Structure formats: structure tokens, C-alpha cells
Image (cartoon, rainbow, N blue to C red; front, side, top):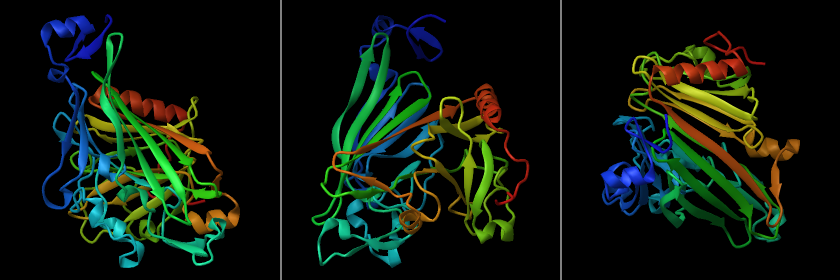
Length: 383
């Protein structure tokens, strides 16, 4: 096949590409933009194209989360009615803590840095402030609506390979409270269908600080449609919402949009592959199109599947998580809460891979099934 990068089916060295175009952006690359209308006005974004049809945007002012994510003009990342709402419009304590849902859109919405899952009021005595003996946390914490600091973005050559990258930092801090920082680097090789996200969360404070982390990774139409499959190496399902047994909508082979649908949520116990990673896929065989997501199982030992198949808000979410469904109260009570000491860090490495044809789908599904064949039932047995 030869050396060099994939350029529309050819293998070109850096020199051979330069002979054909003086500007790398004829193939792919990085562009910084600012969104300028409606609720998105003022959000800085970094657009990345890899030259294979893969294009996505990193929302700098939304914790450097990935918003739009598409391949060959077909959307993969879910687009909800909220749009990519500017964090200045966010009311953290509104609506009894679930106002997060008014800013919920895109392929990736990060939850944390000290709290995930449902609202909770918890002890805050570690911060030694008599007027703040407890802290109240809303749904999925604060980080997704904190603007990031852009450290850099661009293209980096390594021999005849070129990588588009963006890096930034998000600071979640309060006087008499936590001081946590997320350092995020997102990278995609030009000529590939893969995106790599590496996060490091560090306690810059001097008090032991709780740390919880979760990715809400959301896939929408057209990848999600009637007959789309969810494929995962599931050992067992340990929890699910009552709506699963009430509605009995399959978690494996999904229907089209449903009237009056109530979200179905599952906590599945996944089996790690030989490299210590969890891998799942969302596959549309009719379009020969899919998305594979993999992550470090030790960093994200828990996993949730979210089905929101309601008309007009049609989505499936895959959610690697540091903690189980009981959230912060259970983690503190059971001793599973992660406490970061000063300068202590946790690292999370995640890969997104577009499955652009039937062969890529078959290879990905076979690999997952070698790790663990998926249970056959459409409604899991819990236990």
C-alpha cells in the first residue's frame, strides 16, 4: 500500500501532497471559528476535517466537548432542540437541578468534575468553611457549561503523517470549595476516521476533593433509525429504569421515533478486551454506517445505555462512567468515591471510530463479539 497518508484512496507522502496543493486544507485540517447567532452566539469552536469525510467541531466554550460530528455529510452526533447554548445563559440551580437539560446537545457532553448523575446535597466539611457545611449539586455537575481556555490548535507533521489537534483547559473552582482542572487534548490523523480524546483531571486545591466523571455520548439520526443496532460485550445488566419492562422497547435493535416514549436507561456490566478497553458500537446496516467507541475500562469501569426514542428528540446515548448509577450519595456511603489529594490526577483515554462501510462494521462487530457475545434478549434480565 506504500508509505504516506490516505488521500482519497491514494497514499501520498508529505512531499507528494505538497506537489499537488500548497495548502493542506485542500485535504483536511483545523479552523477556528466563533458561532454568531441565537443561543450559540459567542461560542468559540475549532473545526477539524480529516479528508475522509469525517468532520467535527470542538466547542471551546462548552468544556471543549465535541458538538457536531459527521461523516460524508451524514450526521452522527445528536442535535437536540437546545442547540449548542452559550454557557452564559445557563442557570445551574434552576428547575430543581435539571436545567442541564436546556444545554444538552452534541456528540459529547462531559459530566463532572466533582459530581455526576442526579442531584444531591452532600457534606463539604473538607473545605473548612463554617458557612458552607454542605454543597448542593445539580444533574451531572458543572463542567459542561464552563468555558475552556484554548491552549492551542493546529496541524502537526510526524514524518509523512499529519495530525489535526486541539488542546485546552477547563477550570472548575470556588473559594472555600473545589479547585479541579480538566486538561483535554483531541487529535485526529489526516486521512483517518478516528478521533482520540485524552483527558487529565487534576486537583489544584489543597483539600481532598471528590471526583466523578462521565461522558454522555449521543448519537442521532440518520445513524440512529429504525433497525439500528447497539452492539456491546455485555456480561449482565445490573440496573434499569421501570420504563424498560413497561414499554419493552428493545435495547439492541431500535425502532423509529416513538410517541409518548419514556426514556429507558440501563447500567450494563461490560467485559474488557485484551487491551483492557471497553468497546461498543452503534450500527446502521441499511446505510452501511456506524460509530465505534472505546475507552480504558479501569478509568471508566461503569457503563450506561440511554434510549430517548421520543418523537422530535430521538437519540441513543452511550455513557462510560467512573461510578455506578447510585451516584454521589451511594459512592460516599459505600466508600467508592474517588478523592483526589493535592496535585493528584486521573487520566481518561477514549477513541471514536467511524465505521464507513459494511466491511468496517463487520470487523468491529466481530471484534466485540470475540470479547463477549451479546445477550440475545431484547429486554435484559437484571441481576
